[in-house]
Every structure is written in C-alpha cells, then in structure tokens.
Image (cartoon, rainbow, N blue to C red):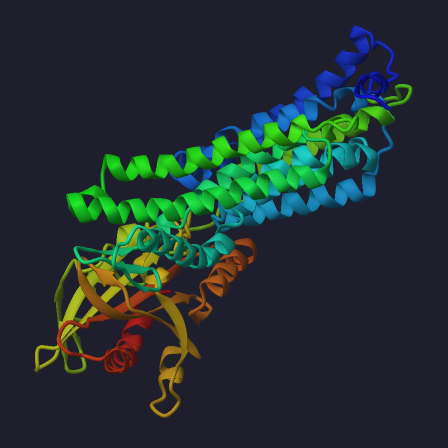
Length: 527
C-alpha cells in the first residue's frame, strides 16, 4: 500500500453535522469549562505564579494546556464518529474521589493535591458523559497535562544527585581529553586554579524535562511507529546529557582563564541556554530524519482516524451535564464558605519564652532565615543560648496558627537548607530523650548558613504530638484539617556551629540535651 492510498483511507466516514448538532456539543463543553475554571481557579493561580513563572524546570507549563488541546483537536473526526456510551458508575466514582482530593488539599493547604485532583476529574467527566471508548481516544491529551503539575517533584529531587555525578564525570572526561590536569571527587572537580562543584541546579534535569515535554507531541504528530518516536526522544535526551557535561567542562576552562566570575552572570546563563537549545535542535533534526523514512504507514495520530465509522450520538446527555454542573458548583460553594480551617493561637506569645533553660541563657539572634525556610509563619522566635563556657545553641520556633497556600510548614518549593542535607536518626534510649521529646526519631542536618557550617536537629509539633518525618507531618496536617477543622503546627530547630573544633556527633548530643530541657517550656506555649 502506497503512502497516497494510505492517506486516502484516512478520510473518516463521518457525515456533515448540522450547526444544531455542533451547538449541542459545544454548549455543554463550554459550561463544564467555566465550572472547572471557577472551581480550580486558586489551583491555576498557584501553578502560574508559583510554579510555571518561578521554576525554570516547569516554565514549559504555559504551553502544556494548549498542546494538550491541540492533540485532542486533531482527533476530532474520530471522536465525532464515536457514539456516547456513558459509564456513570466508574465516572462518578472518579469524580467523587477527585472532589475528596480537592477538599483535602484545600483544607490542608496542599495545592499539589488540588492540582492532581484536576488531572483526575477530567477523565472522570469523560467517563461519566461519554464512556470508555472516548476516554481511550483522548488518553494521550489528558495524560500530557501532567507535565504542567509538579507532582513528580520528590522523585526528581532524588535523581538530581546521579545526574550531578554523571555531568561531572562527562565534564572531567572532556577536560582530560584536552590535556587539563583534573582531580575528580564526586560532584567536585579540582583544577589547578579553581575547584568546581556541579550543584543541583547544574544537573541538567530541567532541560531534559522540557525536551521530553516538547518531544512527545512532536513525535506523535510526525512519526509513524512508536519505536521511532521513542528513539527520537531518547536520542535527544542523550545528546542533552552530553551537552550538559560539555557545559561543565566549558565552565572549568572559562574559570581557569578568566576567573571565578565567569561561573556567574551572563556567561553562566548562556551555558544553560546552550544545553537546552542543543537538546531541542537535536530533537527536531532527529525527528526530521526519522520522519523522512516513510514506509507507507500512517502517522501515529492518524491511526485512530482509520477506525472512524458512521457518526453516533456524540453530544452528551443534558441531564448528566446538568448533574455534573450542579455538583461542581456545589463543591465550589462548600469550599468557599464551609471548608475553611480555624486558626488556633498560641497559648502564650513566643516573646515570653524562657530566656533561661537549665544552664543556658538566651538572647535574640537572627541566625536563621525562618521566613524563607518556613514562609508565612504566624509567630517566630529566633534566639541564641549560651552556657557558662560560652558555647552557643541556636533556637528557632516557627508557629502556624493556620496554613494557607504559600504559608505551609511542609513546603517543598521553599528554599529550606535544612531539608536538603537532612537524615533521620533514632533517638538514644539511655538518657530518656524519646520520652522527653515524644519522638522515636529526629531529623539531623549539617547545613552551611551564611558561610558557617552547622549541626542542626529539628522536628514538628502538632496538637496530637511531635513527629519528625516530613511526609508523616504533612499527612497529620491534612488529617487534622479535614477531620478537626484546624491545622495549626510548629517547627522547632536547634543548631550549633561546627567552626570551633566541635565534632558533628558531639554537637548533636549537646543539641538533644538542650531539647530535653526546652521541651517542657514548649508545651506551655504551643497548643
């Protein structure tokens, strides 16, 4: 079969629809769009202002809704040929689950849960109004929308490190190939004139995400087999990884000859632009080369059109549309007027927190940027306590009467130096620390703050008790907000500088001893 004959077969056997038929289809879709826009407006606002605009890794999010809409539009003839066979039970279950997720996210100031709710409610509506065949037909556009939501943030955070090491290794290989003496240790690259660190921001992952997000619709519209489509995307990703390693090498060379200032400013921005543009250019070149090899088969997006038959009743039932609209507006009214959590004030102002704890005497100290690590706290306390020998222990308390989007204790998008270097340790039994703090484990971190290395311990306190794990803390906050209508909580941070010959283990032991003495006072202030 030639390509011409294959293309001719792609013309679907769909008769022309009257303007009234089109209107019966467009009006319900417009009504649903308005209802979803109003219901998820706070979610979209968060995505635009806090994710797409501020985070380079998700700057492609502005294009994702339009690309998804176009991927659905190119299937319009096939969709028009399908008869609506609603699956109300399955669709209704998905919609109800999405509403529950939206309510939980709204109550617990967990906007990511609200975003995932939006990704789920769309297939639920398709099932409820049209059925499984329609859902299968629009599965790719709906799945593509996930690129606009940072739900993979935790997974991506875990793979930054191996990509940092890989970029460093490639950069070292390039430098050695050009005859530069290099000492390589993990993410550090030591040259005679300078030592480079391949930081998290230089792992190249944000460029890879953009390439994949752009590559999926590109190969879907141009390639004829899934094998070629996948090969094109993987090739572009591989070249981008190599380009990022070359970027590391260029940074080392430029810093060697022109100084450390070349690692910042316009030259650094150009290097990042270079990596992303190389990946995108290679993506288009490989896609063009693969698309030239025609074997007479239709392109991926055209295959569904070959299955088109006589048009069925595509317009959804008015009764079902009305039911969904009433439900969505009802959920919106409930969230707006009845789902708000109640603020819980402190028992006593933190300003009156004891200045003397055991042998330690405190004074005010702005040692920690609490508003950056825990933005929007209702009340804060920042002090330094010293013993008779002058040894300091730094204390930070951040209390949230109520949590709102952008004002949450567990905030993965806030620049928190403690979380980046934190591990969990089991508390010792012999000194009764577990009983005193009400914890079995505690977070231990060794951050560098304003050029000074610290040993730090921190945990979270809720009305139901203290916890250390951030995932457990987030879950408890959501449960309290959903079931008890309040989500007040506090974070307590203790730290000691490591610039006086103090070992990490000795500092942690001293911080835990101070924590045992401070815990009774915390109970008198934090509800």
